[in-house]
Image 1 (spheres, one colour):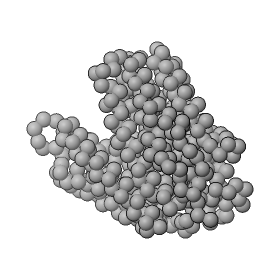
Image 2 (cartoon, helix red, strand yellow):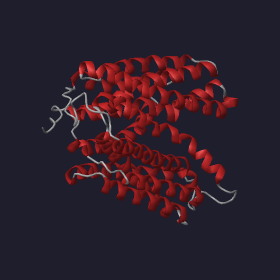
Image 3 (cartoon, rainbow, N blue to C red):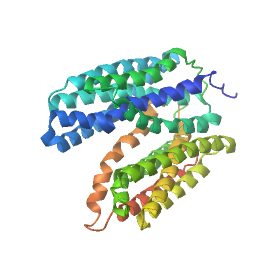
Image 4 (cartoon, rainbow, N blue to C red):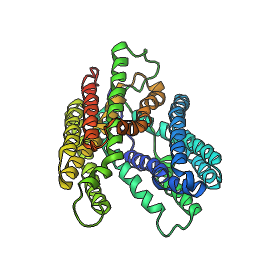
Length: 396
């Protein structure tokens, strides 16, 4: 039987809420955390920021899996995941209050750990909702739409730090309010039908080939996330090394990244829709891998700023398309609807583990070799990830 299409208006509400998740964390991790660290311990800000990132990543890895498991329990009883999302949204407000009140490094680290629990209590079930509600034939389109979440998160960081919001408390309040405005409509008005494929419970355990493909999917995403994290960490320094114009490179780099963001969003949406029409994800994953590898190599060998910018745009486009359509493919491989939240949370470890890779890459590059060697290494990692994705056998 053909799975039912999502209820009318479900996809826009879900897309808005998913973007709200990025609004809930991107202003904090990109700007507000650094400001808070500076206020608490300016003389030890680098070390404290590193501790905060490490604690956050460790707690997030555990909390996401636990939240996915809890949302599975709730879904089996109610066929809905909105309650844990609502609880997480409420706890996010409390966590931001705790962060604002923190006056010592220990208090800040404890508040950040609590904030990660609250965030992942929303994140894990929200990701699983797509597998619950969107049939395979539409997963590419919806995954492509969700590609706008990162740019929206970037824009929200500028919004909550606007001159209108003076002081730390006002910025935290604005952050919570903006996220709530995007998530609450989904909680109130979205109608869940459990129309995703494989919607019957009580299925047999996953066969060995399916489990092997899930492992391949995990490795592929991890490798591509490593490449993406490395690109994000070192792109600005690479651009600055090649800038020959007047003034510093900050303005031109920001302009180049803004143009690339627009191209990436459009390309990801179009690729998602096209993959649904074709009926397969792997050809697009292969093409996206070629773009990532070509873009990273282009950045490594380009002698000037423009060539490096073009390589960056090509690589970012490939990364966005790969990660979006990989999400759609991974959801099609899930062995049972009863454990979607937990299984997707395990897959989500690929978002936290790569954070430790950029410093390792930098340490391995010989002194004076430049960042070109880093991007060549990242190209090899991306190629490994793409090849592993293409080795998946049980695409459905």
